[in-house]
Image (cartoon, rainbow, N blue to C red):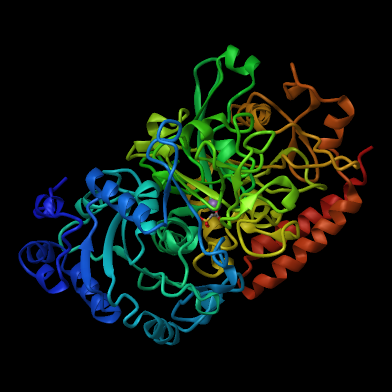
Length: 625
Ligand code: SAT
Ligand code: MN
Protein backbone atom coordinates (compact mmCIF):
# COMPACT_ATOMS: atom_id res chain seq x y z
CA UNK A 1 0.00 0.00 0.00
CA UNK A 2 1.39 3.44 -0.90
CA UNK A 3 2.02 5.54 2.15
CA UNK A 4 0.48 8.93 2.32
CA UNK A 5 3.12 11.65 2.33
CA UNK A 6 1.61 14.13 4.73
CA UNK A 7 0.27 11.75 7.41
CA UNK A 8 3.21 12.38 9.71
CA UNK A 9 2.80 16.12 9.53
CA UNK A 10 -0.88 15.93 10.34
CA UNK A 11 -0.35 13.47 13.17
CA UNK A 12 1.91 15.95 14.88
CA UNK A 13 -0.62 18.71 14.70
CA UNK A 14 -2.11 19.44 18.08
CA UNK A 15 -5.85 19.20 18.15
CA UNK A 16 -6.07 22.19 20.46
CA UNK A 17 -4.02 24.32 18.10
CA UNK A 18 -6.34 24.29 15.15
CA UNK A 19 -5.09 26.06 12.12
CA UNK A 20 -7.27 28.48 10.29
CA UNK A 21 -8.63 27.41 6.96
CA UNK A 22 -6.28 29.72 5.15
CA UNK A 23 -3.19 28.30 6.89
CA UNK A 24 -4.41 24.84 6.06
CA UNK A 25 -4.43 25.67 2.40
CA UNK A 26 -0.61 25.75 2.61
CA UNK A 27 2.21 23.18 2.72
CA UNK A 28 0.77 19.89 4.00
CA UNK A 29 -2.57 20.30 2.37
CA UNK A 30 -0.85 21.21 -0.85
CA UNK A 31 1.09 17.92 -0.80
CA UNK A 32 -2.05 16.06 0.10
CA UNK A 33 -4.00 18.12 -2.42
CA UNK A 34 -1.89 16.90 -5.29
CA UNK A 35 -2.55 13.31 -4.47
CA UNK A 36 -6.20 13.79 -3.65
CA UNK A 37 -7.09 16.90 -5.53
CA UNK A 38 -10.70 15.85 -6.02
CA UNK A 39 -11.12 15.50 -2.24
CA UNK A 40 -9.54 18.87 -1.60
CA UNK A 41 -11.55 20.71 -4.21
CA UNK A 42 -14.73 19.33 -2.71
CA UNK A 43 -13.66 20.10 0.90
CA UNK A 44 -12.85 23.66 -0.15
CA UNK A 45 -16.26 24.06 -1.78
CA UNK A 46 -17.95 22.96 1.44
CA UNK A 47 -15.73 25.24 3.52
CA UNK A 48 -16.81 28.22 1.45
CA UNK A 49 -20.45 27.26 2.01
CA UNK A 50 -20.49 26.48 5.74
CA UNK A 51 -17.92 29.17 6.58
CA UNK A 52 -16.19 27.65 9.64
CA UNK A 53 -13.60 29.30 11.84
CA UNK A 54 -11.21 26.34 11.45
CA UNK A 55 -10.76 23.23 9.37
CA UNK A 56 -9.32 20.12 11.01
CA UNK A 57 -8.53 16.84 9.30
CA UNK A 58 -9.08 13.82 11.50
CA UNK A 59 -6.16 11.37 11.53
CA UNK A 60 -7.70 8.62 13.65
CA UNK A 61 -4.83 8.31 16.12
CA UNK A 62 -5.28 7.52 19.83
CA UNK A 63 -4.17 10.88 21.16
CA UNK A 64 -6.59 12.66 18.92
CA UNK A 65 -9.36 10.42 20.23
CA UNK A 66 -8.48 11.25 23.86
CA UNK A 67 -8.53 14.95 23.07
CA UNK A 68 -11.92 14.64 21.39
CA UNK A 69 -13.37 12.72 24.34
CA UNK A 70 -11.94 15.27 26.78
CA UNK A 71 -13.50 18.09 24.82
CA UNK A 72 -16.87 16.28 24.78
CA UNK A 73 -16.63 15.86 28.56
CA UNK A 74 -15.79 19.51 28.96
CA UNK A 75 -18.76 20.73 26.91
CA UNK A 76 -21.10 18.35 28.77
CA UNK A 77 -21.91 16.05 25.83
CA UNK A 78 -20.13 13.14 27.50
CA UNK A 79 -20.25 12.05 31.11
CA UNK A 80 -17.31 9.77 31.93
CA UNK A 81 -18.41 6.45 33.43
CA UNK A 82 -16.84 4.52 36.29
CA UNK A 83 -13.22 4.13 35.18
CA UNK A 84 -12.84 0.78 36.94
CA UNK A 85 -15.98 -0.91 35.69
CA UNK A 86 -16.27 0.87 32.33
CA UNK A 87 -12.83 2.24 31.36
CA UNK A 88 -12.84 4.92 28.66
CA UNK A 89 -16.64 4.78 28.42
CA UNK A 90 -19.03 7.70 28.20
CA UNK A 91 -22.72 8.38 28.75
CA UNK A 92 -24.51 10.75 26.45
CA UNK A 93 -28.03 11.98 25.79
CA UNK A 94 -29.34 13.18 22.46
CA UNK A 95 -31.93 15.89 21.97
CA UNK A 96 -35.27 14.21 22.84
CA UNK A 97 -36.56 15.17 19.38
CA UNK A 98 -33.69 13.23 17.76
CA UNK A 99 -33.70 9.62 18.97
CA UNK A 100 -34.08 7.36 15.89
CA UNK A 101 -33.92 7.25 12.14
CA UNK A 102 -36.63 9.38 10.54
CA UNK A 103 -37.77 7.73 7.35
CA UNK A 104 -40.12 10.61 6.53
CA UNK A 105 -37.14 12.98 6.41
CA UNK A 106 -34.87 10.61 4.43
CA UNK A 107 -34.56 11.27 0.69
CA UNK A 108 -33.10 9.58 -2.35
CA UNK A 109 -32.36 12.37 -4.81
CA UNK A 110 -31.75 10.42 -7.99
CA UNK A 111 -31.70 12.32 -11.28
CA UNK A 112 -35.00 10.76 -12.36
CA UNK A 113 -37.95 10.14 -10.08
CA UNK A 114 -38.45 6.63 -11.47
CA UNK A 115 -34.95 5.68 -10.25
CA UNK A 116 -36.11 6.30 -6.68
CA UNK A 117 -39.23 4.17 -6.49
CA UNK A 118 -42.11 3.78 -4.07
CA UNK A 119 -40.13 2.80 -0.96
CA UNK A 120 -38.24 6.11 -0.84
CA UNK A 121 -38.97 9.81 -0.72
CA UNK A 122 -37.72 11.60 -3.82
CA UNK A 123 -36.73 15.16 -4.36
CA UNK A 124 -35.25 16.48 -7.57
CA UNK A 125 -31.49 16.85 -6.87
CA UNK A 126 -31.35 20.54 -7.87
CA UNK A 127 -34.26 21.43 -5.60
CA UNK A 128 -32.79 19.46 -2.72
CA UNK A 129 -29.39 21.08 -3.20
CA UNK A 130 -30.95 24.52 -3.10
CA UNK A 131 -32.83 23.62 0.07
CA UNK A 132 -29.74 22.15 1.75
CA UNK A 133 -27.43 24.94 0.63
CA UNK A 134 -29.78 27.32 2.40
CA UNK A 135 -29.56 25.28 5.60
CA UNK A 136 -25.80 24.72 5.34
CA UNK A 137 -24.85 28.29 4.45
CA UNK A 138 -22.75 29.69 7.31
CA UNK A 139 -23.95 26.78 9.50
CA UNK A 140 -20.44 26.31 10.91
CA UNK A 141 -19.54 29.96 11.40
CA UNK A 142 -17.56 30.34 14.60
CA UNK A 143 -17.19 26.53 14.72
CA UNK A 144 -14.63 24.00 13.56
CA UNK A 145 -15.29 22.00 10.43
CA UNK A 146 -13.84 18.52 10.76
CA UNK A 147 -13.01 16.37 7.78
CA UNK A 148 -13.31 12.69 8.67
CA UNK A 149 -11.88 10.27 6.09
CA UNK A 150 -13.26 6.79 6.69
CA UNK A 151 -12.89 3.34 5.24
CA UNK A 152 -15.82 0.91 5.02
CA UNK A 153 -14.43 -2.62 5.02
CA UNK A 154 -11.18 -4.28 6.05
CA UNK A 155 -7.85 -2.64 5.35
CA UNK A 156 -6.40 -3.87 2.07
CA UNK A 157 -9.66 -5.34 0.78
CA UNK A 158 -10.51 -4.78 -2.88
CA UNK A 159 -14.15 -4.58 -1.73
CA UNK A 160 -13.58 -1.77 0.81
CA UNK A 161 -14.66 1.77 -0.04
CA UNK A 162 -13.68 5.24 1.12
CA UNK A 163 -15.96 8.00 2.34
CA UNK A 164 -15.54 11.43 3.86
CA UNK A 165 -17.83 12.96 6.41
CA UNK A 166 -17.43 16.67 6.94
CA UNK A 167 -19.05 17.41 10.27
CA UNK A 168 -19.24 19.99 13.04
CA UNK A 169 -20.01 17.31 15.65
CA UNK A 170 -17.30 15.82 17.84
CA UNK A 171 -19.94 13.36 19.09
CA UNK A 172 -20.26 12.04 15.54
CA UNK A 173 -16.48 11.71 15.22
CA UNK A 174 -16.22 9.82 18.52
CA UNK A 175 -18.88 7.38 17.29
CA UNK A 176 -17.53 7.14 13.74
CA UNK A 177 -14.15 6.27 15.22
CA UNK A 178 -15.71 3.13 16.70
CA UNK A 179 -18.02 2.30 13.81
CA UNK A 180 -15.60 2.74 10.90
CA UNK A 181 -11.86 2.77 10.27
CA UNK A 182 -11.21 6.50 10.26
CA UNK A 183 -8.38 8.86 9.38
CA UNK A 184 -5.17 8.07 7.56
CA UNK A 185 -6.09 4.43 6.96
CA UNK A 186 -8.87 5.65 4.68
CA UNK A 187 -6.68 8.14 2.80
CA UNK A 188 -4.17 5.39 2.18
CA UNK A 189 -6.86 3.37 0.47
CA UNK A 190 -7.55 6.15 -1.97
CA UNK A 191 -5.27 5.86 -4.97
CA UNK A 192 -3.74 8.94 -6.52
CA UNK A 193 -6.29 10.84 -8.54
CA UNK A 194 -9.09 8.52 -7.39
CA UNK A 195 -12.50 10.15 -7.50
CA UNK A 196 -14.37 7.06 -6.28
CA UNK A 197 -15.23 8.22 -2.76
CA UNK A 198 -18.43 9.19 -1.00
CA UNK A 199 -18.80 12.87 -0.21
CA UNK A 200 -20.71 13.44 3.02
CA UNK A 201 -21.64 16.61 4.86
CA UNK A 202 -23.24 16.66 8.26
CA UNK A 203 -24.24 19.76 10.19
CA UNK A 204 -25.95 19.68 13.58
CA UNK A 205 -27.48 23.11 12.86
CA UNK A 206 -30.23 23.77 15.43
CA UNK A 207 -31.78 20.28 15.44
CA UNK A 208 -35.06 21.59 14.07
CA UNK A 209 -37.03 18.39 13.32
CA UNK A 210 -39.08 20.23 10.68
CA UNK A 211 -35.91 21.06 8.76
CA UNK A 212 -34.21 17.71 9.31
CA UNK A 213 -32.91 16.13 6.11
CA UNK A 214 -31.04 12.90 5.46
CA UNK A 215 -30.41 13.29 1.75
CA UNK A 216 -28.66 10.91 -0.61
CA UNK A 217 -27.51 11.62 -4.16
CA UNK A 218 -26.74 8.16 -5.56
CA UNK A 219 -25.66 9.45 -8.97
CA UNK A 220 -22.83 11.51 -7.45
CA UNK A 221 -22.27 9.44 -4.28
CA UNK A 222 -23.14 12.30 -1.92
CA UNK A 223 -24.80 12.31 1.49
CA UNK A 224 -25.98 15.39 3.34
CA UNK A 225 -27.61 15.26 6.76
CA UNK A 226 -28.66 18.33 8.70
CA UNK A 227 -30.51 19.12 11.92
CA UNK A 228 -29.78 15.72 13.46
CA UNK A 229 -26.98 14.26 15.56
CA UNK A 230 -28.27 10.70 16.16
CA UNK A 231 -27.41 7.22 14.96
CA UNK A 232 -27.99 6.28 11.36
CA UNK A 233 -29.02 9.86 10.51
CA UNK A 234 -25.65 11.32 11.46
CA UNK A 235 -23.12 8.44 11.46
CA UNK A 236 -23.07 8.43 7.69
CA UNK A 237 -20.92 5.35 7.19
CA UNK A 238 -23.68 3.05 8.40
CA UNK A 239 -27.07 3.18 6.70
CA UNK A 240 -26.41 6.21 4.45
CA UNK A 241 -23.21 4.91 2.81
CA UNK A 242 -22.93 1.18 3.53
CA UNK A 243 -26.56 0.53 2.55
CA UNK A 244 -28.26 3.33 0.58
CA UNK A 245 -25.35 4.61 -1.52
CA UNK A 246 -23.60 1.22 -1.60
CA UNK A 247 -26.74 -0.60 -2.79
CA UNK A 248 -26.92 1.76 -5.77
CA UNK A 249 -23.20 1.20 -6.45
CA UNK A 250 -23.66 -2.56 -6.06
CA UNK A 251 -26.43 -2.54 -8.67
CA UNK A 252 -24.11 -0.87 -11.19
CA UNK A 253 -21.08 -2.98 -10.27
CA UNK A 254 -22.71 -6.40 -9.89
CA UNK A 255 -22.59 -7.11 -6.16
CA UNK A 256 -24.92 -6.86 -3.14
CA UNK A 257 -24.97 -4.40 -0.21
CA UNK A 258 -27.32 -5.92 2.34
CA UNK A 259 -28.74 -5.36 5.84
CA UNK A 260 -27.30 -8.66 7.07
CA UNK A 261 -25.24 -10.03 9.92
CA UNK A 262 -22.42 -12.44 9.07
CA UNK A 263 -21.51 -15.36 11.31
CA UNK A 264 -19.27 -18.41 11.18
CA UNK A 265 -20.43 -21.80 12.51
CA UNK A 266 -18.01 -24.62 13.26
CA UNK A 267 -19.63 -28.01 13.72
CA UNK A 268 -18.28 -30.90 15.84
CA UNK A 269 -16.42 -32.37 12.86
CA UNK A 270 -14.53 -29.09 12.51
CA UNK A 271 -16.26 -27.98 9.32
CA UNK A 272 -16.84 -24.24 9.13
CA UNK A 273 -19.75 -22.58 7.35
CA UNK A 274 -20.59 -18.91 7.00
CA UNK A 275 -24.09 -17.56 7.05
CA UNK A 276 -25.67 -14.14 6.40
CA UNK A 277 -28.98 -13.16 7.97
CA UNK A 278 -31.29 -10.24 7.24
CA UNK A 279 -33.71 -9.16 9.97
CA UNK A 280 -35.23 -5.68 10.26
CA UNK A 281 -33.64 -3.20 12.73
CA UNK A 282 -33.99 -4.20 16.39
CA UNK A 283 -35.09 -7.82 15.69
CA UNK A 284 -32.13 -9.49 17.36
CA UNK A 285 -29.44 -9.44 14.65
CA UNK A 286 -26.78 -8.50 17.19
CA UNK A 287 -27.86 -11.33 19.51
CA UNK A 288 -27.89 -13.88 16.69
CA UNK A 289 -24.47 -12.73 15.42
CA UNK A 290 -22.99 -13.32 18.90
CA UNK A 291 -24.96 -16.45 19.75
CA UNK A 292 -23.59 -18.61 22.54
CA UNK A 293 -24.68 -22.22 22.00
CA UNK A 294 -26.29 -24.14 24.88
CA UNK A 295 -23.98 -26.33 26.96
CA UNK A 296 -24.69 -29.56 25.09
CA UNK A 297 -23.68 -27.93 21.80
CA UNK A 298 -20.54 -26.34 23.25
CA UNK A 299 -19.52 -29.68 24.76
CA UNK A 300 -20.09 -31.39 21.43
CA UNK A 301 -17.74 -28.89 19.74
CA UNK A 302 -20.05 -26.32 18.15
CA UNK A 303 -18.68 -22.80 17.90
CA UNK A 304 -20.13 -19.51 16.64
CA UNK A 305 -17.95 -16.63 15.51
CA UNK A 306 -19.08 -13.12 14.69
CA UNK A 307 -18.02 -11.42 11.46
CA UNK A 308 -20.63 -8.65 11.47
CA UNK A 309 -23.92 -7.74 13.17
CA UNK A 310 -25.68 -5.41 10.75
CA UNK A 311 -24.32 -4.99 7.23
CA UNK A 312 -22.76 -7.32 4.65
CA UNK A 313 -21.22 -6.50 1.28
CA UNK A 314 -21.30 -9.58 -0.93
CA UNK A 315 -19.06 -9.92 -3.96
CA UNK A 316 -18.37 -12.80 -6.29
CA UNK A 317 -14.94 -14.34 -5.63
CA UNK A 318 -12.71 -15.83 -8.31
CA UNK A 319 -14.23 -19.25 -7.60
CA UNK A 320 -17.73 -17.95 -8.43
CA UNK A 321 -18.97 -18.06 -4.84
CA UNK A 322 -20.37 -15.09 -2.91
CA UNK A 323 -17.93 -13.67 -0.34
CA UNK A 324 -19.07 -11.32 2.43
CA UNK A 325 -17.18 -8.55 4.18
CA UNK A 326 -18.47 -6.51 7.09
CA UNK A 327 -17.94 -2.87 6.09
CA UNK A 328 -18.20 -1.73 9.71
CA UNK A 329 -15.71 -1.69 12.57
CA UNK A 330 -18.07 -1.56 15.54
CA UNK A 331 -21.54 -2.34 16.82
CA UNK A 332 -24.31 0.22 17.26
CA UNK A 333 -26.51 -2.10 19.26
CA UNK A 334 -29.88 -1.62 20.93
CA UNK A 335 -29.22 -1.49 24.68
CA UNK A 336 -32.60 -2.40 26.27
CA UNK A 337 -32.91 -6.15 26.61
CA UNK A 338 -29.16 -6.73 26.31
CA UNK A 339 -27.91 -8.58 29.37
CA UNK A 340 -25.57 -11.25 30.65
CA UNK A 341 -28.43 -13.71 30.00
CA UNK A 342 -29.50 -12.59 26.53
CA UNK A 343 -26.11 -11.64 25.05
CA UNK A 344 -23.05 -12.11 27.28
CA UNK A 345 -20.72 -11.42 24.35
CA UNK A 346 -22.27 -7.99 23.78
CA UNK A 347 -21.99 -7.21 27.50
CA UNK A 348 -18.26 -8.03 27.41
CA UNK A 349 -17.80 -6.02 24.21
CA UNK A 350 -19.30 -2.84 25.63
CA UNK A 351 -17.34 -2.93 28.89
CA UNK A 352 -14.65 -0.51 27.67
CA UNK A 353 -14.02 2.15 25.01
CA UNK A 354 -17.76 2.47 24.39
CA UNK A 355 -20.38 5.19 24.17
CA UNK A 356 -23.88 4.86 25.64
CA UNK A 357 -26.50 7.12 24.12
CA UNK A 358 -29.94 7.59 25.70
CA UNK A 359 -29.57 4.74 28.19
CA UNK A 360 -30.21 5.46 31.85
CA UNK A 361 -27.44 5.97 34.41
CA UNK A 362 -26.87 4.25 37.74
CA UNK A 363 -25.85 7.30 39.79
CA UNK A 364 -24.27 5.34 42.65
CA UNK A 365 -21.95 3.29 40.46
CA UNK A 366 -21.74 5.69 37.52
CA UNK A 367 -22.49 2.85 35.15
CA UNK A 368 -25.02 2.70 32.30
CA UNK A 369 -28.34 0.98 32.95
CA UNK A 370 -31.32 -0.03 30.85
CA UNK A 371 -34.44 -2.14 31.17
CA UNK A 372 -33.43 -5.79 31.11
CA UNK A 373 -29.78 -5.26 32.12
CA UNK A 374 -30.54 -6.38 35.67
CA UNK A 375 -33.70 -7.79 37.14
CA UNK A 376 -34.06 -4.96 39.64
CA UNK A 377 -33.27 -1.37 38.73
CA UNK A 378 -30.52 0.34 40.72
CA UNK A 379 -31.46 2.58 43.67
CA UNK A 380 -30.59 5.92 42.15
CA UNK A 381 -31.23 6.27 38.47
CA UNK A 382 -31.10 9.15 36.05
CA UNK A 383 -33.24 8.49 32.98
CA UNK A 384 -32.40 9.17 29.33
CA UNK A 385 -34.00 12.60 29.65
CA UNK A 386 -31.67 13.49 32.51
CA UNK A 387 -34.35 13.30 35.20
CA UNK A 388 -34.27 11.35 38.44
CA UNK A 389 -36.14 8.12 37.87
CA UNK A 390 -37.67 5.26 39.83
CA UNK A 391 -40.02 2.50 38.65
CA UNK A 392 -42.95 4.45 40.14
CA UNK A 393 -42.44 7.13 37.52
CA UNK A 394 -44.03 4.67 35.10
CA UNK A 395 -41.91 5.60 32.06
CA UNK A 396 -38.91 3.72 30.68
CA UNK A 397 -35.58 4.79 32.17
CA UNK A 398 -33.72 4.06 28.94
CA UNK A 399 -35.14 5.09 25.57
CA UNK A 400 -36.29 1.92 23.70
CA UNK A 401 -33.87 2.83 20.87
CA UNK A 402 -30.97 3.70 23.20
CA UNK A 403 -27.71 2.31 21.90
CA UNK A 404 -24.19 1.26 22.77
CA UNK A 405 -21.40 2.06 20.32
CA UNK A 406 -18.70 -0.56 20.90
CA UNK A 407 -15.57 -1.71 19.02
CA UNK A 408 -16.13 -5.02 17.17
CA UNK A 409 -12.58 -6.15 17.96
CA UNK A 410 -13.53 -6.31 21.66
CA UNK A 411 -16.20 -8.94 21.07
CA UNK A 412 -15.15 -12.30 22.59
CA UNK A 413 -16.73 -14.13 19.63
CA UNK A 414 -15.19 -11.92 16.92
CA UNK A 415 -13.91 -13.99 14.03
CA UNK A 416 -10.35 -13.82 12.72
CA UNK A 417 -12.02 -13.32 9.36
CA UNK A 418 -13.52 -10.01 10.47
CA UNK A 419 -10.34 -8.39 9.14
CA UNK A 420 -9.97 -10.66 6.13
CA UNK A 421 -9.63 -8.65 2.89
CA UNK A 422 -11.11 -11.54 0.90
CA UNK A 423 -14.19 -11.88 3.10
CA UNK A 424 -15.90 -15.18 3.92
CA UNK A 425 -17.69 -17.56 1.51
CA UNK A 426 -21.42 -17.66 2.26
CA UNK A 427 -23.27 -20.99 2.41
CA UNK A 428 -26.71 -19.77 3.47
CA UNK A 429 -28.75 -16.58 3.53
CA UNK A 430 -31.44 -16.33 6.18
CA UNK A 431 -34.37 -13.92 6.10
CA UNK A 432 -36.50 -13.36 9.17
CA UNK A 433 -39.00 -11.06 10.77
CA UNK A 434 -40.81 -10.60 14.03
CA UNK A 435 -44.10 -12.45 13.48
CA UNK A 436 -46.48 -13.54 16.23
CA UNK A 437 -48.40 -15.80 13.83
CA UNK A 438 -48.39 -17.41 10.36
CA UNK A 439 -44.65 -17.92 9.74
CA UNK A 440 -43.12 -21.21 10.92
CA UNK A 441 -39.84 -21.47 12.83
CA UNK A 442 -37.91 -22.22 9.64
CA UNK A 443 -38.31 -23.14 5.99
CA UNK A 444 -36.02 -23.28 3.00
CA UNK A 445 -36.78 -21.69 -0.32
CA UNK A 446 -36.95 -23.99 -3.34
CA UNK A 447 -34.49 -21.98 -5.45
CA UNK A 448 -32.66 -18.64 -5.61
CA UNK A 449 -35.64 -17.13 -7.45
CA UNK A 450 -38.10 -18.45 -4.88
CA UNK A 451 -35.73 -17.29 -2.10
CA UNK A 452 -35.64 -13.83 -3.65
CA UNK A 453 -39.46 -13.85 -3.55
CA UNK A 454 -39.39 -14.99 0.12
CA UNK A 455 -37.00 -12.12 0.95
CA UNK A 456 -39.10 -9.60 -0.95
CA UNK A 457 -42.32 -10.62 0.79
CA UNK A 458 -40.96 -10.75 4.32
CA UNK A 459 -42.85 -8.66 6.84
CA UNK A 460 -42.23 -7.76 10.45
CA UNK A 461 -43.84 -6.05 13.40
CA UNK A 462 -42.32 -2.55 13.65
CA UNK A 463 -39.75 -1.80 16.38
CA UNK A 464 -38.48 1.40 17.98
CA UNK A 465 -35.49 1.66 15.60
CA UNK A 466 -37.46 4.07 13.45
CA UNK A 467 -40.00 6.66 14.45
CA UNK A 468 -43.51 5.23 13.97
CA UNK A 469 -46.08 2.84 15.36
CA UNK A 470 -44.32 0.04 17.24
CA UNK A 471 -45.97 -3.35 16.64
CA UNK A 472 -47.70 -2.59 13.33
CA UNK A 473 -47.00 -5.19 10.61
CA UNK A 474 -44.77 -3.74 7.90
CA UNK A 475 -43.57 -5.31 4.68
CA UNK A 476 -39.81 -5.04 4.70
CA UNK A 477 -38.21 -6.65 1.63
CA UNK A 478 -34.86 -8.21 2.55
CA UNK A 479 -35.01 -6.00 5.72
CA UNK A 480 -33.90 -3.30 3.27
CA UNK A 481 -37.07 -1.26 2.74
CA UNK A 482 -35.65 1.89 4.39
CA UNK A 483 -32.20 1.31 2.90
CA UNK A 484 -32.59 0.52 -0.82
CA UNK A 485 -30.90 3.49 -2.49
CA UNK A 486 -32.83 3.13 -5.76
CA UNK A 487 -36.04 1.70 -7.17
CA UNK A 488 -37.15 -1.37 -5.20
CA UNK A 489 -38.34 -3.07 -8.41
CA UNK A 490 -34.86 -2.67 -9.93
CA UNK A 491 -33.37 -3.97 -6.68
CA UNK A 492 -35.54 -7.12 -6.90
CA UNK A 493 -34.42 -7.59 -10.51
CA UNK A 494 -30.80 -7.16 -9.38
CA UNK A 495 -31.25 -10.06 -6.94
CA UNK A 496 -32.61 -12.18 -9.78
CA UNK A 497 -29.66 -11.17 -11.99
CA UNK A 498 -27.20 -12.17 -9.25
CA UNK A 499 -29.01 -15.53 -9.23
CA UNK A 500 -28.51 -15.94 -12.97
CA UNK A 501 -24.83 -15.18 -12.60
CA UNK A 502 -24.11 -17.31 -9.55
CA UNK A 503 -25.84 -20.51 -10.61
CA UNK A 504 -25.31 -23.58 -8.48
CA UNK A 505 -22.62 -21.96 -6.32
CA UNK A 506 -25.05 -19.56 -4.69
CA UNK A 507 -25.98 -19.81 -1.02
CA UNK A 508 -29.24 -21.57 -0.19
CA UNK A 509 -31.97 -19.25 1.11
CA UNK A 510 -34.03 -19.77 4.30
CA UNK A 511 -36.68 -17.94 6.30
CA UNK A 512 -36.84 -18.04 10.11
CA UNK A 513 -39.22 -16.69 12.75
CA UNK A 514 -38.07 -16.77 16.38
CA UNK A 515 -41.08 -14.76 17.53
CA UNK A 516 -44.14 -16.96 16.96
CA UNK A 517 -46.56 -16.83 19.89
CA UNK A 518 -49.07 -19.25 21.41
CA UNK A 519 -52.71 -18.24 21.86
CA UNK A 520 -51.89 -17.06 25.41
CA UNK A 521 -49.31 -14.60 24.04
CA UNK A 522 -46.22 -16.49 25.21
CA UNK A 523 -43.35 -17.17 22.82
CA UNK A 524 -43.36 -20.73 21.46
CA UNK A 525 -39.63 -20.82 20.82
CA UNK A 526 -36.99 -20.06 23.50
CA UNK A 527 -34.77 -18.21 20.99
CA UNK A 528 -31.29 -16.85 21.80
CA UNK A 529 -28.68 -19.64 22.13
CA UNK A 530 -31.24 -22.31 21.20
CA UNK A 531 -31.42 -20.79 17.71
CA UNK A 532 -28.35 -22.87 16.92
CA UNK A 533 -30.73 -25.83 16.59
CA UNK A 534 -32.26 -24.11 13.58
CA UNK A 535 -28.80 -23.29 12.23
CA UNK A 536 -27.85 -26.95 12.60
CA UNK A 537 -30.77 -27.99 10.37
CA UNK A 538 -29.97 -25.23 7.87
CA UNK A 539 -26.37 -26.45 7.58
CA UNK A 540 -27.50 -30.06 7.26
CA UNK A 541 -29.51 -28.93 4.25
CA UNK A 542 -26.46 -27.12 2.87
CA UNK A 543 -24.39 -30.30 3.26
CA UNK A 544 -27.14 -32.52 1.85
CA UNK A 545 -27.63 -34.33 5.17
CA UNK A 546 -31.35 -33.65 5.70
CA UNK A 547 -34.12 -34.28 3.22
CA UNK A 548 -36.79 -32.11 4.91
CA UNK A 549 -40.38 -32.16 3.85
CA UNK A 550 -42.13 -30.12 1.16
CA UNK A 551 -44.87 -27.72 2.23
CA UNK A 552 -46.55 -24.91 0.29
CA UNK A 553 -43.89 -22.57 1.69
CA UNK A 554 -40.84 -24.57 0.70
CA UNK A 555 -38.89 -27.22 2.59
CA UNK A 556 -39.38 -27.62 6.34
CA UNK A 557 -37.55 -29.94 8.77
CA UNK A 558 -38.97 -33.38 9.36
CA UNK A 559 -39.64 -33.65 13.12
CA UNK A 560 -36.80 -36.17 13.38
CA UNK A 561 -34.36 -33.72 11.78
CA UNK A 562 -34.66 -31.09 14.53
CA UNK A 563 -32.30 -31.70 17.42
CA UNK A 564 -34.40 -31.25 20.56
CA UNK A 565 -32.05 -32.90 23.07
CA UNK A 566 -32.12 -30.97 26.37
CA UNK A 567 -34.67 -28.58 24.95
CA UNK A 568 -37.46 -27.55 27.28
CA UNK A 569 -40.33 -27.45 24.81
CA UNK A 570 -43.52 -29.50 24.60
CA UNK A 571 -44.30 -31.58 21.51
CA UNK A 572 -47.47 -29.55 21.08
CA UNK A 573 -45.52 -26.27 21.03
CA UNK A 574 -43.00 -27.69 18.58
CA UNK A 575 -45.80 -28.80 16.30
CA UNK A 576 -47.45 -25.39 16.53
CA UNK A 577 -44.13 -23.73 15.59
CA UNK A 578 -44.22 -25.56 12.28
CA UNK A 579 -47.96 -25.54 11.75
CA UNK A 580 -49.46 -24.14 8.60
CA UNK A 581 -52.85 -22.45 8.60
CA UNK A 582 -54.51 -21.99 5.25
CA UNK A 583 -56.67 -19.16 6.58
CA UNK A 584 -53.64 -17.27 7.84
CA UNK A 585 -51.80 -17.88 4.58
CA UNK A 586 -54.73 -16.74 2.44
CA UNK A 587 -54.52 -13.45 4.33
CA UNK A 588 -50.72 -13.39 4.04
CA UNK A 589 -50.87 -13.91 0.29
CA UNK A 590 -53.43 -11.08 -0.01
CA UNK A 591 -51.24 -8.75 1.99
CA UNK A 592 -48.23 -9.74 -0.15
CA UNK A 593 -50.26 -8.91 -3.24
CA UNK A 594 -51.08 -5.48 -1.88
CA UNK A 595 -47.43 -4.86 -1.13
CA UNK A 596 -46.20 -6.14 -4.51
CA UNK A 597 -48.73 -3.86 -6.22
CA UNK A 598 -47.05 -0.84 -4.60
CA UNK A 599 -43.87 -1.62 -6.58
CA UNK A 600 -45.73 -0.91 -9.82
CA UNK A 601 -44.55 -1.68 -13.34
CA UNK A 602 -40.99 -2.44 -12.27
CA UNK A 603 -42.01 -5.51 -10.29
CA UNK A 604 -40.16 -8.36 -12.04
CA UNK A 605 -42.47 -10.78 -13.81
CA UNK A 606 -40.73 -13.72 -12.15
CA UNK A 607 -41.70 -12.35 -8.74
CA UNK A 608 -45.36 -11.91 -9.70
CA UNK A 609 -45.26 -15.51 -10.96
CA UNK A 610 -43.74 -16.78 -7.70
CA UNK A 611 -46.59 -15.06 -5.90
CA UNK A 612 -49.21 -16.74 -8.05
CA UNK A 613 -47.53 -20.12 -7.55
CA UNK A 614 -47.54 -19.63 -3.77
CA UNK A 615 -51.25 -18.78 -3.90
CA UNK A 616 -52.00 -21.97 -5.79
CA UNK A 617 -49.92 -24.10 -3.42
CA UNK A 618 -51.65 -22.57 -0.40
CA UNK A 619 -55.09 -23.26 -1.92
CA UNK A 620 -54.20 -26.80 -2.92
CA UNK A 621 -52.74 -27.76 0.42
CA UNK A 622 -55.53 -27.14 2.89
CA UNK A 623 -55.02 -26.91 6.63
CA UNK A 624 -52.47 -29.35 8.02
CA UNK A 625 -53.94 -30.96 11.12
O1 SAT B 1 -30.06 3.30 11.63
S1 SAT B 1 -29.42 3.18 12.91
O2 SAT B 1 -28.00 3.02 12.69
O3 SAT B 1 -29.69 4.35 13.75
C1 SAT B 1 -29.97 1.83 13.75
C2 SAT B 1 -30.80 0.88 12.99
O4 SAT B 1 -31.90 1.22 12.58
O5 SAT B 1 -30.35 -0.27 12.81
MN1 MN C 1 -29.55 -2.27 11.17
